Every structure is written in structure tokens, then in C-alpha cells.
Length: 541
Image 1: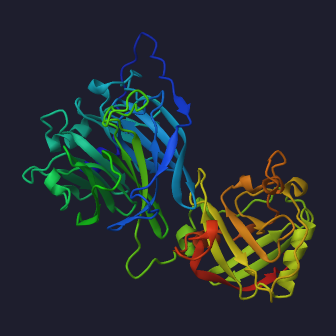
Image 2 (image 1 turned 60 degrees about the vertical axis):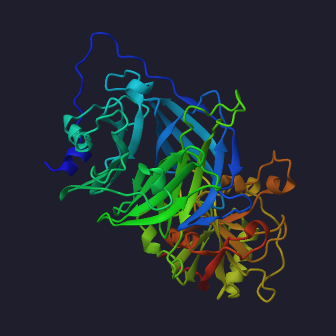
């Protein structure tokens, strides 16, 4: 059996049944943390360091749960997962606006369990230093002090066991001291990368295991951090085998430094960024990668070194947990818009679902430069708004217009947001404004694929519309809202029933950072996607 199979197909050795009842599962805590948005560089929103562009960050204040020392980070299905060096698992739900990290909307955490349900709280048994999600969907956690790998079907449940074959990976690093074990673990289809905190080139600090076998190598810290003893502390890999490695260092009197290196599948290393003071830094120990078509994001999180309770002390050593988001800069030739085919197999490509399929409707096809988009207009449920759109179609007022705006929004599913198109206020195309049809009246809602009217205020909509990518029901009318605009909401009048892969590709299209005004600055698509024609669809046979 290859090293790859030995690691990625760990078969849990079930513990013998005990006569006494199994220990009760440790409780799970969930709370809304106190966070403050922070900047990497004071006064600058999108600081670029090397190949990394800062996309927002938050400082997580101390709380009753005492988050503690986060040692590893992993992105999965819209959530950040972590483990701590006190034997706890954690979920952090990021809050993002227009692609920027601005909040943590929820934290869930609990104690990791052993194979028999025993608590792993504390340093002796629970010094969790590395976390990765296997291609099987299971989790692998590496522990120091008591060097071992445990496998979990779910981090909230007991470990499924410790496979003796995992000892081979630990033995490859020959940890002599309690902090010389596996510090970094990153799995992907076809391989696993593991690293230890070492600086001596004579003792390789990284190991990549593939079907071809194990390959040990030394990953040196880049200039700017090497002189401070930079060591690997976390990593994450894309499906193609490109891995991103976080290195950190601390020097008394000079503070923390960090670096991010990209490792090609053949282990060729490229330094993406070296982060040094006076940038706002901390003891970064966790890195997660979020790969989307055409864009790649990295999240970095810090370990508070057991000194985060600033509520009890004002000492200079008081630390809080920092969580940062970065985007890897596109190639110098400029960003390339992903093709709809990149989304074809993704959940985001699914068509919108009409909440009242029995209601009368009319289908319209927008033939765009990327392919056809079919919109089913709710002529019975939203007669005024649907008739207005049909007039634009029948009079060919949408021919030659564009999808010109894209906005990222938060949510459990990603990518998520909206794309906007239409007349763009062109007086030669725009018809008179129409009466507002709120969702409280039509019974429609801003779910995935919904098509809604763009407007400045109720009763001002003309020839511009937007399409929802994933559910954004906050755009619905809210009769309890104190703000009249949100009480009225926006007017849904149809659903994209074909071509959501096209809409997803438009959402991912490169944007002009300087175009747009006010809240829309940075949301204008650099190369708007042309709507070649808009026509009623041929009736179904």
C-alpha cells in the first residue's frame, strides 16, 4: 500500500466496547462574538503586499468562551473550521460585504473527543496543531506532545480511531521534542502535504505524499522572515495540488512576522508575500484557501498565546484574535473572466425555482456574449413589473445593453451575490418609471435565480434589473422595518430557469476597482457582458 493510501484511506480501529456507558458528548457553545473591523495598514482599505491584496479583517474580542490558541484553519462550504492547542474544534461564520470580511456572525466550539468519547481538553492530550479535510469528507487532526493523527467523520463527534499506519507519517519527522511533530497538514485529491516547525536544512521540514510515494524536502523561509527563524505553521491546498504555506516568526522587540509561499505540485516554491511591521500583525498560525473560478482567497488567523483576555488586563501583552482575508492578485496580464463551463457542475449553476409554478408566465431568452439566459416572467403574480420588462423586450430596448455590475454578498453558499444589467439609465432606452409591486403583494421572493427591479426608491424602476445568486431574502419587503425603503423591499418579477452558469460567471468577472460611485465603487464589471438580443422564447410544444 502506498503512503498516499496509508494516509488518505485510514481505517479506524474501533475500540473494544466498554462495560460502562460511553461518556456524554461535550457540550457545544454557540455565540455572537464581539468583533471590530481592522486594517492591515492604517488608512488603507486594500493594501497590497507582494501578490496578496488585503480584503478585510476583524479583531475578535475576548469572550466568556475564551477562544484561545487557534492552531489551524480550513475553509469548507462557506465556513471556517479550526482547532486549538487546548483540544477544541471551532466553526467561524464569516460576515462579508461586497467581498470584504467585516464580521464574524457566529462562533461554535466544543471539545475534541477521543475514540472512546473521552475529552481531549488540555495541552497534554489535546494539543491540536493541524487540521485538514480529506477528499472523503472526513477530517484529520494532528496532535503534538502526544504525537498522533486522529480521524473524524464529524469534528463534533468522537474520533473514529487512530490507525497504526499514520505512525509512518509521524516517524518521517522523527519528533524528539513535544513541539517537533506535525504542524501543518493539507490534503487534496491525489496527495497530502505535511510540515514541521524546523529551520535546519539538514532535517527536511516538509513531506508531500502522492501515489508516486513520499517526497521529503526542506522549505526555507524567504528573506524578511528567515533571519527571524521563520517556520511553517499551516497550509492549505487547491484541488489541483497547489498548496499555500504559512510561515511565522517572533523576535523579542521586533514583534511578529509572517510569510505565504505557493508550492506548485512539483514543490517549486514562490513567495507570495512577506508581512512585517508596521503592518498590523500577530502570531498567525492558521491558513485556509478558498478557491473560486477565476479568484483565489486566503484567510489567516492568529493564535492569542493564552493572553487574549483584554477585559481583565490592559497590559501591553494583551492580545486578541485576528482574522484576515486576502486575495491572490491576478497575473500581470490582468484577470481573466472565468467561462460558464467552470460553474457547470457547481451547485450555483442550478436553475431558479418558481415559488408558484402553476401561475401564468412568459419565458424570455437573453442571448448574451457568454451564452443564453432564460428568464421566466411572473406575468400573473407581478403583472405590472413583468409587462414592463416585456415591453423592453418587444421594443428591442435591451438589445446591445450589458450586465455591468456585480456585487458579492454573504451567505452559507458561495459564490453569492447579484449581477445587474439593463438600460443603465440611458434616456434613449428608458421608459417611464413603473408602480412598485412589493413581494408582500406578489408572494414572490429573492431566492436563487430571482430577477428583480433595480431602483433608487419604490416607484422609480425603469429598465434595469438584477439577478440573485443564492438566496438573498433580505431584499424582500419587510413590513416590520422602520426604514420605508426596506419595508417596501425590491420587486421580484421572474426567475432564471436556464443559464445560471452564465450568471455565476458574470458575478465572478473582473471588476474595475475605481469605477462606480458611493457604495457601488469597485462593483462595476471591467468588461461588461453584452446582451446581444432579448426575445420571447418560442412556446413549448
